[in-house]
Length: 342
Ligand code: NAD
Ligand code: TDX
Image 1: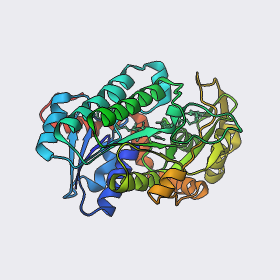
Image 2 (image 1 turned 60 degrees about the vertical axis):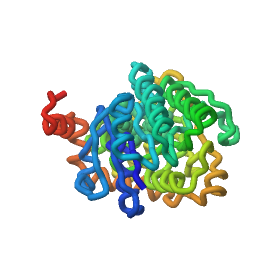
Image 3 (image 1 turned 30 degrees about the vertical axis):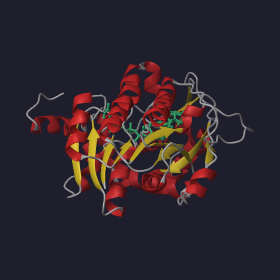
Image 4 (image 1 turned 90 degrees about the horizontal axis):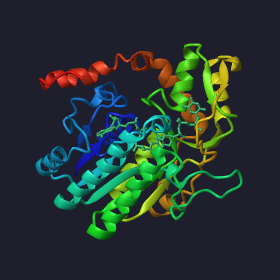
């Protein structure tokens, strides 16, 4: 099976590439990634020369490039991770979110329509459903889409395009909507890696608002296994929620990190809230459990400990990300092609 994985140099994508190569000996992967600030080839050094893996630097919104790749490789499946993924950045400037998360998805769908694939997995998010109150039942796949941030709106727009390409053109699209992921190789702009790395540097830990917003934390490897199962067994036209049922207030997560690192709570600094900050996400995952046979295997306590251990053991990785030195991997890639560095 030939897979096009997009955004494979990011956090979840790189974990997925590694998981898929290790667990699916019949899968060949082409990783198409633009190497934005969030893409880092250092996430994939261990598989860079794997015989069933190839990397292409490029933009999913580049129609000619995407068409050329589809013609050349005749993909059986697409797994689209490529996205602008950070809510705070979408508040500062929504334009790149529309370009990649909406237009890029349309370009991929169009290529899949023209050249045909067996599965097209769109990696979406629980944020498309909006926010829950403390006593509301979790979102099901039937819950209405009520995105509140420009990021969530761009992902919801993509989900609707996916639905339309399935209904109108028969593209075999499957949407996964997962809760907050955490684990190795997560960019330290997101809550857990930002707090771990700041604490290790004895810097303040900025908690938004009252710190009582709730997220359901899913260990990244559990999400990768779910997505791989959806590639193999998912039904086109369907949506699958993926969550661990590990709801935590942000402040609890931050305190747990400080405890694991032996650092004081005095590092916590309450800062101005994120505009439009969703209060709570929670997912009903009965459908993927019933229809695909997936369930999470890593508890939050275990996953957080593993994650903290990973950041402790991989200090050069996150120091290079925080200093900006990691951009040399992207620059070297350009250099190799004889293109201007940038
Ligand atoms: P990330 O920001 O770590 O990685 C995104 C990757 O996409 C990067 O490698 C980047 O270079 C690449 N990319 C961006 N624009 C591109 C373009 N135009 N063309 C090609 N590549 C491009 O993101 P992540 O946290 O790994 O998230 C992956 C996907 O999962 C996203 O679609 C996101 O919406 C979704 N998701 C993430 C979470 C989470 O908690 N991180 C939860 C639910 C869903
Ligand atoms: O510095 C911070 N302080 C803070 O209190 C940051 C970065 C975050 N937060 C809060 C905001 C959220 O309530 O922590 C929570 C988690 O924030 P993020 O890590 O930015 O994640 P979130 O906004 O929940 O979105 C994430 O999960 C869903 C991913 O970034 C998305 O890509 C995914 O779709």
